[in-house]
Image 1: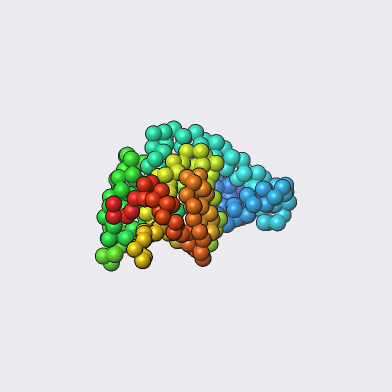
Image 2: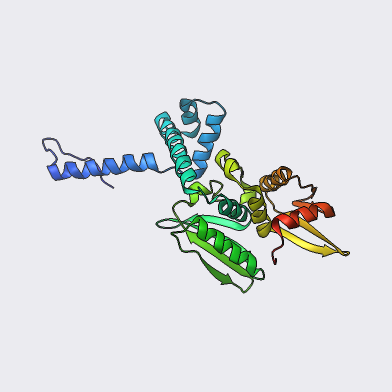
Length: 268
Protein backbone atom coordinates (compact mmCIF):
# COMPACT_ATOMS: atom_id res chain seq x y z
CA UNK A 1 0.00 0.00 0.00
CA UNK A 2 1.29 3.46 -0.92
CA UNK A 3 0.92 6.44 1.41
CA UNK A 4 1.50 10.15 0.87
CA UNK A 5 4.23 10.74 3.46
CA UNK A 6 6.13 13.81 2.39
CA UNK A 7 8.38 15.28 5.09
CA UNK A 8 8.33 19.00 5.92
CA UNK A 9 10.61 20.88 3.55
CA UNK A 10 10.70 18.09 1.03
CA UNK A 11 8.81 17.71 -2.24
CA UNK A 12 7.99 14.61 -4.29
CA UNK A 13 9.99 13.86 -7.38
CA UNK A 14 8.34 13.74 -10.80
CA UNK A 15 8.58 9.95 -10.79
CA UNK A 16 6.82 9.80 -7.41
CA UNK A 17 4.06 12.08 -8.67
CA UNK A 18 3.56 9.82 -11.68
CA UNK A 19 3.28 6.76 -9.41
CA UNK A 20 0.64 8.39 -7.21
CA UNK A 21 -1.26 9.63 -10.24
CA UNK A 22 -1.27 6.09 -11.65
CA UNK A 23 -2.51 4.65 -8.33
CA UNK A 24 -5.27 7.25 -8.15
CA UNK A 25 -6.33 6.57 -11.77
CA UNK A 26 -6.50 2.82 -11.11
CA UNK A 27 -8.57 3.44 -7.98
CA UNK A 28 -11.09 5.57 -9.86
CA UNK A 29 -11.28 3.01 -12.68
CA UNK A 30 -11.92 0.19 -10.21
CA UNK A 31 -14.47 2.26 -8.29
CA UNK A 32 -16.49 2.98 -11.42
CA UNK A 33 -16.22 -0.38 -13.18
CA UNK A 34 -16.48 -3.03 -10.47
CA UNK A 35 -20.01 -3.70 -9.30
CA UNK A 36 -21.24 -7.00 -7.96
CA UNK A 37 -24.27 -8.46 -9.68
CA UNK A 38 -26.22 -8.59 -6.40
CA UNK A 39 -25.73 -4.87 -5.67
CA UNK A 40 -26.56 -3.87 -9.23
CA UNK A 41 -29.79 -5.89 -9.10
CA UNK A 42 -30.69 -4.04 -5.88
CA UNK A 43 -30.00 -0.71 -7.60
CA UNK A 44 -32.26 -1.59 -10.53
CA UNK A 45 -35.02 -2.82 -8.22
CA UNK A 46 -34.98 0.32 -6.07
CA UNK A 47 -34.81 2.50 -9.18
CA UNK A 48 -37.90 0.78 -10.63
CA UNK A 49 -39.68 1.43 -7.32
CA UNK A 50 -39.19 5.15 -7.89
CA UNK A 51 -36.40 5.93 -5.43
CA UNK A 52 -34.00 8.73 -6.33
CA UNK A 53 -30.30 8.05 -6.86
CA UNK A 54 -29.49 9.83 -3.58
CA UNK A 55 -31.94 7.66 -1.60
CA UNK A 56 -30.61 4.50 -3.24
CA UNK A 57 -27.07 5.60 -2.42
CA UNK A 58 -27.93 6.14 1.24
CA UNK A 59 -29.58 2.72 1.48
CA UNK A 60 -26.67 0.88 -0.17
CA UNK A 61 -23.89 3.09 1.25
CA UNK A 62 -22.82 4.25 -2.20
CA UNK A 63 -22.30 7.74 -3.60
CA UNK A 64 -25.26 8.90 -5.69
CA UNK A 65 -22.95 9.60 -8.65
CA UNK A 66 -22.04 5.89 -8.72
CA UNK A 67 -25.73 4.98 -8.89
CA UNK A 68 -26.27 7.46 -11.72
CA UNK A 69 -23.18 6.22 -13.59
CA UNK A 70 -24.30 2.57 -13.61
CA UNK A 71 -27.93 3.26 -14.48
CA UNK A 72 -26.88 5.44 -17.43
CA UNK A 73 -24.29 2.86 -18.51
CA UNK A 74 -26.89 0.08 -18.53
CA UNK A 75 -29.35 2.23 -20.50
CA UNK A 76 -26.68 2.96 -23.11
CA UNK A 77 -25.64 -0.70 -23.32
CA UNK A 78 -29.23 -1.85 -23.72
CA UNK A 79 -29.80 0.52 -26.66
CA UNK A 80 -26.54 -0.53 -28.33
CA UNK A 81 -27.14 -4.24 -27.69
CA UNK A 82 -30.64 -4.10 -29.17
CA UNK A 83 -29.28 -2.67 -32.39
CA UNK A 84 -26.45 -5.21 -32.52
CA UNK A 85 -28.72 -8.11 -31.60
CA UNK A 86 -31.30 -7.29 -34.26
CA UNK A 87 -28.54 -7.19 -36.86
CA UNK A 88 -26.80 -10.30 -35.53
CA UNK A 89 -29.96 -12.42 -35.34
CA UNK A 90 -31.33 -11.38 -38.72
CA UNK A 91 -32.16 -14.64 -40.50
CA UNK A 92 -31.27 -16.71 -37.42
CA UNK A 93 -34.53 -16.29 -35.48
CA UNK A 94 -35.49 -19.96 -35.77
CA UNK A 95 -32.12 -21.22 -34.51
CA UNK A 96 -32.07 -18.62 -31.74
CA UNK A 97 -35.57 -19.58 -30.57
CA UNK A 98 -34.60 -23.25 -30.39
CA UNK A 99 -31.35 -22.62 -28.50
CA UNK A 100 -33.08 -20.19 -26.13
CA UNK A 101 -35.50 -22.97 -25.22
CA UNK A 102 -32.62 -25.40 -24.71
CA UNK A 103 -30.74 -22.86 -22.59
CA UNK A 104 -33.71 -22.17 -20.33
CA UNK A 105 -34.09 -25.89 -19.72
CA UNK A 106 -30.59 -27.32 -19.46
CA UNK A 107 -28.17 -24.51 -20.30
CA UNK A 108 -25.61 -22.61 -18.25
CA UNK A 109 -23.47 -19.57 -19.12
CA UNK A 110 -20.30 -18.67 -17.24
CA UNK A 111 -17.51 -16.11 -17.62
CA UNK A 112 -14.07 -17.40 -18.61
CA UNK A 113 -10.79 -15.48 -18.66
CA UNK A 114 -11.40 -13.84 -22.03
CA UNK A 115 -14.96 -14.63 -23.08
CA UNK A 116 -18.18 -16.45 -22.10
CA UNK A 117 -19.07 -20.12 -22.40
CA UNK A 118 -22.50 -21.66 -23.00
CA UNK A 119 -22.95 -25.28 -21.98
CA UNK A 120 -26.09 -27.31 -22.67
CA UNK A 121 -26.38 -30.60 -20.78
CA UNK A 122 -28.14 -33.34 -22.75
CA UNK A 123 -29.01 -37.01 -22.33
CA UNK A 124 -26.55 -39.09 -24.37
CA UNK A 125 -29.27 -41.60 -25.29
CA UNK A 126 -30.86 -39.00 -27.60
CA UNK A 127 -28.30 -38.47 -30.40
CA UNK A 128 -30.86 -36.63 -32.57
CA UNK A 129 -31.29 -33.94 -29.90
CA UNK A 130 -27.51 -33.59 -29.59
CA UNK A 131 -27.15 -33.34 -33.36
CA UNK A 132 -29.93 -30.72 -33.61
CA UNK A 133 -28.39 -28.69 -30.78
CA UNK A 134 -24.95 -28.65 -32.44
CA UNK A 135 -26.51 -27.74 -35.81
CA UNK A 136 -28.55 -24.81 -34.47
CA UNK A 137 -25.62 -23.50 -32.43
CA UNK A 138 -23.46 -23.61 -35.55
CA UNK A 139 -25.98 -21.42 -37.35
CA UNK A 140 -26.26 -19.04 -34.40
CA UNK A 141 -22.47 -18.78 -33.99
CA UNK A 142 -21.03 -19.36 -37.48
CA UNK A 143 -17.55 -18.07 -36.53
CA UNK A 144 -17.24 -20.05 -33.30
CA UNK A 145 -16.43 -23.72 -32.93
CA UNK A 146 -19.22 -25.80 -31.41
CA UNK A 147 -17.95 -28.83 -29.53
CA UNK A 148 -19.11 -31.45 -27.04
CA UNK A 149 -17.87 -33.76 -24.30
CA UNK A 150 -19.38 -36.90 -22.77
CA UNK A 151 -19.60 -37.21 -19.00
CA UNK A 152 -20.13 -40.51 -17.22
CA UNK A 153 -21.49 -42.01 -20.48
CA UNK A 154 -24.98 -40.59 -19.74
CA UNK A 155 -24.54 -36.84 -20.23
CA UNK A 156 -23.33 -35.04 -23.34
CA UNK A 157 -22.32 -31.41 -22.84
CA UNK A 158 -22.55 -29.28 -25.99
CA UNK A 159 -20.67 -25.98 -25.66
CA UNK A 160 -19.59 -22.85 -27.48
CA UNK A 161 -17.57 -19.74 -26.54
CA UNK A 162 -18.68 -16.24 -27.53
CA UNK A 163 -18.65 -12.67 -26.22
CA UNK A 164 -22.22 -12.31 -27.55
CA UNK A 165 -23.67 -14.77 -25.02
CA UNK A 166 -24.59 -12.37 -22.16
CA UNK A 167 -26.42 -10.13 -24.63
CA UNK A 168 -28.19 -12.92 -26.50
CA UNK A 169 -29.25 -14.64 -23.27
CA UNK A 170 -29.94 -11.90 -20.70
CA UNK A 171 -31.50 -14.52 -18.39
CA UNK A 172 -28.03 -15.76 -17.39
CA UNK A 173 -26.95 -15.36 -13.77
CA UNK A 174 -24.91 -16.86 -10.97
CA UNK A 175 -27.62 -18.73 -9.10
CA UNK A 176 -29.76 -21.63 -10.32
CA UNK A 177 -32.66 -20.57 -12.53
CA UNK A 178 -35.34 -21.60 -10.02
CA UNK A 179 -33.63 -19.41 -7.39
CA UNK A 180 -33.93 -16.16 -9.38
CA UNK A 181 -36.36 -14.36 -11.67
CA UNK A 182 -36.48 -15.49 -15.30
CA UNK A 183 -38.25 -13.20 -17.74
CA UNK A 184 -38.10 -12.80 -21.50
CA UNK A 185 -36.97 -9.38 -22.70
CA UNK A 186 -39.26 -7.41 -24.99
CA UNK A 187 -36.90 -7.84 -27.93
CA UNK A 188 -36.90 -11.61 -27.36
CA UNK A 189 -40.70 -11.73 -27.42
CA UNK A 190 -40.66 -9.85 -30.72
CA UNK A 191 -38.38 -12.28 -32.57
CA UNK A 192 -39.12 -15.68 -31.01
CA UNK A 193 -40.51 -18.34 -33.37
CA UNK A 194 -42.92 -20.10 -31.01
CA UNK A 195 -42.74 -23.53 -32.66
CA UNK A 196 -38.92 -23.62 -32.50
CA UNK A 197 -38.90 -22.19 -28.99
CA UNK A 198 -41.36 -24.84 -27.78
CA UNK A 199 -39.27 -27.59 -29.38
CA UNK A 200 -36.16 -26.32 -27.60
CA UNK A 201 -37.96 -26.29 -24.26
CA UNK A 202 -39.32 -29.80 -24.84
CA UNK A 203 -35.97 -31.23 -25.98
CA UNK A 204 -34.39 -29.99 -22.76
CA UNK A 205 -36.96 -30.69 -20.03
CA UNK A 206 -39.83 -32.46 -21.77
CA UNK A 207 -40.79 -36.09 -22.23
CA UNK A 208 -42.97 -38.17 -24.56
CA UNK A 209 -44.20 -41.43 -23.09
CA UNK A 210 -46.78 -44.19 -23.49
CA UNK A 211 -49.25 -45.28 -20.83
CA UNK A 212 -52.22 -47.64 -21.18
CA UNK A 213 -51.85 -47.63 -24.94
CA UNK A 214 -51.83 -43.82 -25.29
CA UNK A 215 -49.01 -41.35 -25.80
CA UNK A 216 -48.58 -38.21 -23.70
CA UNK A 217 -46.29 -35.19 -23.41
CA UNK A 218 -45.15 -33.33 -20.34
CA UNK A 219 -42.72 -30.56 -19.43
CA UNK A 220 -41.08 -30.43 -16.00
CA UNK A 221 -39.02 -27.63 -14.47
CA UNK A 222 -38.43 -26.33 -10.93
CA UNK A 223 -38.62 -22.69 -12.06
CA UNK A 224 -42.16 -21.30 -11.92
CA UNK A 225 -41.07 -18.54 -14.30
CA UNK A 226 -39.92 -21.04 -16.92
CA UNK A 227 -43.12 -23.05 -16.47
CA UNK A 228 -45.09 -19.87 -17.13
CA UNK A 229 -42.99 -19.15 -20.23
CA UNK A 230 -43.80 -22.66 -21.48
CA UNK A 231 -47.52 -22.18 -20.77
CA UNK A 232 -47.57 -18.81 -22.52
CA UNK A 233 -45.98 -20.38 -25.59
CA UNK A 234 -48.58 -23.15 -25.59
CA UNK A 235 -51.33 -20.52 -25.31
CA UNK A 236 -49.99 -18.73 -28.38
CA UNK A 237 -50.08 -22.01 -30.31
CA UNK A 238 -53.57 -22.93 -28.98
CA UNK A 239 -52.28 -26.04 -27.22
CA UNK A 240 -54.23 -27.07 -24.11
CA UNK A 241 -52.59 -28.41 -20.96
CA UNK A 242 -53.13 -29.30 -17.33
CA UNK A 243 -50.83 -28.57 -14.39
CA UNK A 244 -49.41 -30.56 -11.53
CA UNK A 245 -46.51 -29.63 -9.24
CA UNK A 246 -43.56 -28.41 -11.35
CA UNK A 247 -45.07 -30.13 -14.41
CA UNK A 248 -47.18 -29.18 -17.42
CA UNK A 249 -49.10 -32.16 -18.82
CA UNK A 250 -50.69 -32.82 -22.20
CA UNK A 251 -53.12 -35.72 -21.87
CA UNK A 252 -55.81 -34.93 -24.44
CA UNK A 253 -55.01 -36.85 -27.61
CA UNK A 254 -55.94 -33.97 -29.90
CA UNK A 255 -53.34 -31.79 -28.12
CA UNK A 256 -50.79 -34.61 -28.24
CA UNK A 257 -51.32 -34.70 -32.01
CA UNK A 258 -50.73 -30.94 -32.26
CA UNK A 259 -47.51 -31.21 -30.28
CA UNK A 260 -46.30 -34.19 -32.29
CA UNK A 261 -46.77 -32.22 -35.53
CA UNK A 262 -44.82 -29.27 -34.10
CA UNK A 263 -42.00 -30.83 -32.09
CA UNK A 264 -42.03 -34.56 -32.84
CA UNK A 265 -40.13 -36.62 -30.26
CA UNK A 266 -36.54 -36.74 -29.08
CA UNK A 267 -35.95 -39.82 -31.22
CA UNK A 268 -37.82 -38.73 -34.36
